[in-house]
Image 1 (tube, rainbow, N blue to C red):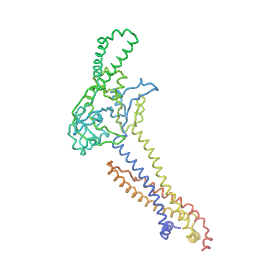
Image 2: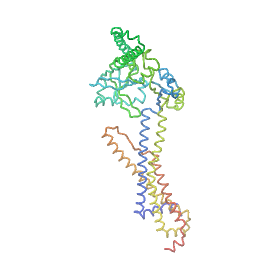
Image 3: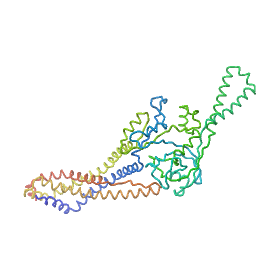
Image 4: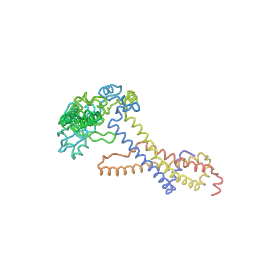
Length: 486
């Protein structure tokens, strides 16, 4: 048999049985279409996550936290995350920028409303990184000392402003309540006058000779003094205010990178911290624990930070930096490490989706087996003639393998097209519902080249495997018996 015969004969047989061939190829088409559409969903989600990581520069972002408990039942050895540590982090090899994460609860008055929100202090060098690059309108800070503010689209939504451009250039009065030690002491001293009146004026002095009574009086008066101090300390904060100009509006990030509603330059934010302590329980606890409550009453109390952000050199592996940070007693979180875990998840997710398509493809392979067996029964005389003319068993096998491969090829190509159509329709429907719910429209489906090649390869592999037994059966046909039967 010539090569030409081995190619044209399978085409001719499929053409003679057009209806049966069409139904068999349709089964493969539906199976490959399901396979492609499902893996397209997984590939689209993975592509979206990867694009988000790239856009926000998360592959080169690392967070550093103080370790709250380095040893069980011992918090005395906690290393504070302060300015000196920030400077050390900034000098690590592979770290391009290190800056603290510092937030304040502020009252923002402006844009025809007053709103209590969180404000984030950001250095200008950090504001120019990818994390803060999603500008809706306007610009970022001009300097660390500028009396400027950048707000998010979420903040504008809360103040019921639909057009971000109208907010740029408007004034925003930002005020912070700072707790001062002086307020507590003043309130406690006011209470001490009442105590002296009770002891000396109201005749309690003679009763103090009794030890048990004296002990009770001291406890009561000390308790009242502590109550007065706490009332003055927490209920009479000083108000620190500043008028800022809104210069830009940032698009609110998702759950992975969530920006605070208001952002101010870091030096401007330090003026808010200079008035005392905030009512943040973490800051208060740290001040009581390290003895800085009295020593730094009206100075900078933001020397300790809950978190620091590192911008890494993209050409330097993050693992040595992470090991160095943790070796010095801090915790770290790297988005590059998180992405490795996300990638593993997508592998399992894609495998689960692929299994559904493969089950459908296995079902379609039974149709191929049935078609090939029926073809052998109908072509016994043809097989007998070919063998009597000198065709070998390998030639007969090759004919039927090529025929099953053609079924797989046609079914795979049309299945890829069907999967693409299904993914486009599904994407259109998903985008419609996203737009109706006010959610940012994202592309959830993708058809990369590796998926196209994988689908065609699987289709051919399963089809050839399904035709293996019928091809072997055809090759074993006895030409004498085949011709006698006719």
